[in-house]
Amino acid sequence: MTGATTTCFLCLQCGVQFAPSEAPPECCPVCEDERQYVRWEGQAWITPEVLAAGHRLVMKDDAGVLAFGIEPRFAIGQRALLVETPHGNVLWDCISMVSDEAVAEINRRGGLAAIAISHCHFYSAMVEWSDAFGGVPIYLHADDRKWIMRPHPAIIAWEGETRAINPSLTLIRCGGHFAGSQVLHWKRDDGNAMLTGDTVQVAPTRRHVSFMYSYPNQIPLNAAAVSRIAAALEPFKFDHIYGAWWNQNVIGDARTAFKASVARYLAAIA
Image (cartoon, rainbow, N blue to C red; front, top):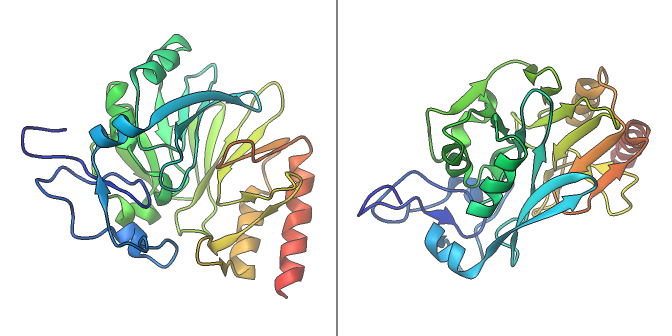
């Protein structure tokens, strides 16, 4: 809530939060885009208070990384990751609710220095997360600026192909799913990792990845876009890939799995 008469409504289908308003927005542009969809029952909204009354934020270890999700499953169902580095912690991707317990756990681990999000489907309650830690910066790529439904001074719409957040973390614009889709490269002692959301989608085998322009509407990504993603990641060494959902990660030899998956995908659509 931002006052007695305004609410930051959340889209019930995608979970993205909108700017304060007295009444729900007329539509959700994120869902009306061909990469998402409006729920069959029609556009609907939920307030943060109602969401919190029927759901809870859960914290779990996911392949050695603290992750945050919502139960029962809400909206797209992604989970966020706490990327812990000696230079400050970063929340990768985001979910639609914040809890006192999650804030306390992050503070116990050294606090939060920034937030970075792969693409607009996961913008969710990014402003509330930033505000919970004193207005930490939110790194989004400028090519996806049009999809920001709740503008905020903490948002940094960066331009270009790479952006270092700190000596351990580098954002890489891959494009593909969205023009500004980005992944996060994480240098760490127990194997470098690439955090990809669903810009690079971890397959159920957890030894392969794949690519789509629209997942729910089953529109594949074209060869040029996939080749661009491969070129963007080529300069970086990584041992693991962390995807967008619980336990969908490639742990060990992920760079080899990524290259093989790119070749397999391009052969399949040729």
